[in-house]
Length: 205
Image (cartoon, rainbow, N blue to C red):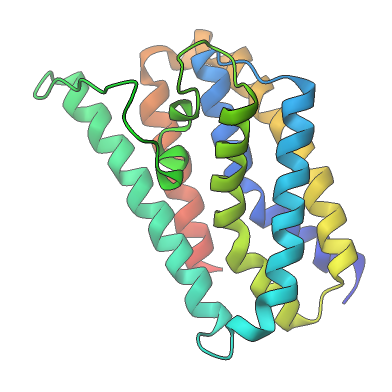
């Protein structure tokens, strides 16, 4: 496999990072350079491990099924955030979430701001690790498929690190620059649609 194949696979696996960081930018949640590096390192390490373990996993379930299930999960999570937005917008249901409520990793994908558990407006070390694990778990299927396809573990891990950093920066830039002008109160809806699009993409590709 060549560099381009490894790059494109890493890019597709990092679309969720872009969507999550756009949501953060919309919500004005801050992420430091150190936190960005930590997220990139953890997701890259997770990709590395998933590629190492991929051949063992596919003895029981095919990479295609794993990838499809991941896409379906994203689709469901994206639909949930859109439905929650509609309920809130129409004032049908008032949501009262406790700060002490336990955060599930899957929650971070459809409502990324939940990673900011103390509502400080900044992502600290603990919250950063929570977000990193959520993103890493979502990338497992890609790592498994890449290992079966014979893609270089080194190249895929390297591109994952680079593209994660890039998408974090790009996502925040898009979210911060355009939310106040064009998105406003519809940021939750748009974030949900981004997650849905990612889920559909993973199912179809």
